[in-house]
Image (cartoon, rainbow, N blue to C red; front, side, top):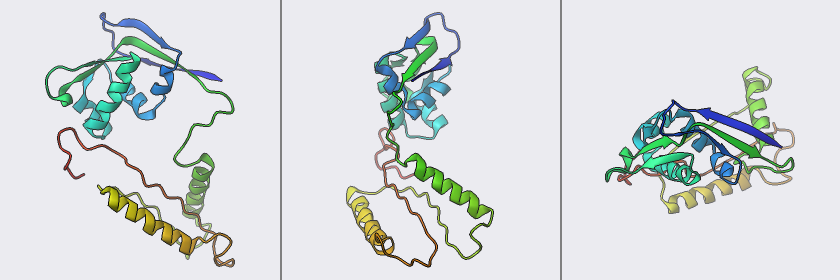
Amino acid sequence: MSTWRELTFPTNSLKDAVLVVEDDRANILADPLRWRILEILGAGKSVVEISQTLDVTDARVLSHLQRLAQTGVVYLEEDGADPQEWRCLPAADTIRVREIRPADDQIAEAMPTDVVSQFNQAAREAAEGLYGSTFQMSVNHNRARLSEEQAAEFGRRLLALIEEYFPPGKGDRSGVKYGFYGILTPIDLHPLGDAETEE
């Protein structure tokens, strides 16, 4: 199965009219953040402009821009010593990307689609009062800078709680069936030149 995605940029006579990507480079462009960078690129933006627009660190943006430049869909002008001021420019007025995905190919997701559906459905039902007023519901999204040791300790303590409260084949059969899905993952790189900055 194949689909086409297309982006058009402000006209610039120095660029090719249309750039068609139908090879392995399409896999690099399939990354959602890289595609979002292309969507907001316009006639061209600096690393810091892109990072501020997307609310991600400039180091993370620069890493993705370098991958995009490898595909030939953008040019990265590395003028000056400060990478924050480097500019990214589209390589064509129009970029067309052909995504080919076999029917049985499953893209790895942090949360499987069926799990996401179950949690979203439960949240809608809870908002409508389906479970009454006595059930417990907790949705947390937290960010912090942790050392590798701290992250490992958090993982160990969380697993101990899961083993205590969600033992396979055990629990209180008369109670409410609860679901828990946890993800601990790096979400951003340190800003360029400022590895100690706190968010």
